[in-house]
Amino acid sequence: MNNTFHSLRIIFAGTPEFAAAHLQTLVASEHQVIAVYTQPDRQAGRGRKITPSAVKVVAQEHAIPIYQPDNFKTSEAQDTFIALHADIMVVVAYGLLLPEIILNTPRLGCINVHASILPRWRGAAPIQRAILAGDTETGITIMQMDKGLDTGDILNITHCPITVQDNSQSLHDKLIQIGQPLLLDTLKQLANGTASPQRQVAEQANYAKKLHKAEALIDWQNTASQIQRQVAAFNPWPMAYTYWQGKMLRILAASVIIHTDNIDSHPPGYVLATHTKGIDIITGANILRIHQLQLAGKRPVEVKEFLNAYSLQGDCLQSTSSG
Image (tube, rainbow, N blue to C red; front, side, top):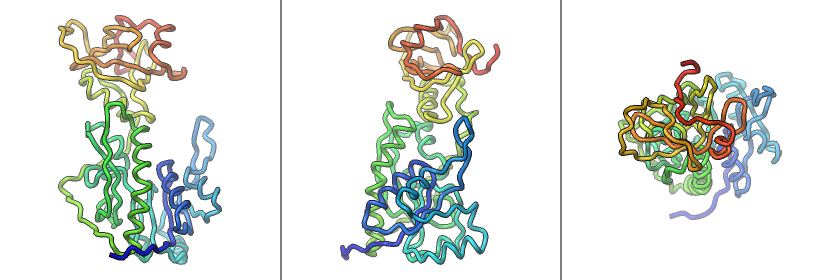
């Protein structure tokens, strides 16, 4: 086995914080990041101010050349990429499809850091879909990219448990921690010619479609477990929500309480009890205990603080703003 270290000329492509953390790892390594591709600056925040991506900010801090094409369809964008003479392209949550001419240009091709144990969740929102589905583990897969959507050969995988305390943000942060060393290890294997790609089993694949705000609306006829996963999956965005007295009420953290008493006299959404441990809501099966929430126009608070200002006992949470 060849263990000689080979420094690589890397083009990095990515956009959000998840990608920026992996870029930082490459910058601190012995490899050379010769260029960064990221999505064009977008409007963000309440003021809709034009804001650079997290990846662009890191690239600027380290004076790395930055490219922000709308796509790679033009000959100009392709020629610019080819002229960089990269050994490899590392793609992490970039958000643009890469044509075959781009995939095939670097000497070692393009690899992708994906936040799932492929082929379990292919697509844009693997972290959230894993939580919603009740998966007990997820992980990071590094694959050799091809023209399909997350269909390339697997180069490396590392696993990560999903606990009942996890939400999308905490899982996102855990995956960064295990993804960074896995990326460096994979680059070493590719540079030394010791990588052993494995084909994906396509029949095991699921599509992790992009999140939509409408999915975050709670249906209290669902089970407490389903709703708890919804709360966890949609924190920090778009946040699971319901309606109370005509106002949107976001639920940031909740747990499931197994309830064996007869509560059929009350409808799903009924506030069964309020106390310092939480707000207990009847669901289609068992009780959902709310621990942290946010009323429209207010800041997020723990239940104890909320109950100092409002009384919900005996009220019914709704899936619409009226009724």
